Image (cartoon, rainbow, N blue to C red; front, side, top):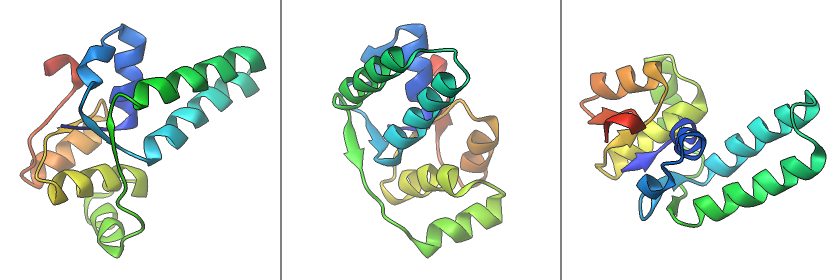
Length: 127
């Protein structure tokens, strides 16, 4: 299964990290998750020290997973345009199609696009 950043975050938030072990995500997940932490620090929801600890923890969690790199592809952009998705979200859809794998996301729009493309997809609570 390929997990997007929203499902990785949900697994951490709900204490079901074990569902991530030996599964896949994209290298871009660490950047997406890091941006969530940065926003929380910039909004004073977390201290800088808490943010640093959280990013280190996220890095440890992601080390349990196989990290896929798909690079920059025009196919991803075409998929984003066709399905009205962000380039980030289209990257996960592209990976699921390319690797013929299940997509796990908390993003309803992405799950709908996956279904439209014939890709099996679930939210993390349903796996």
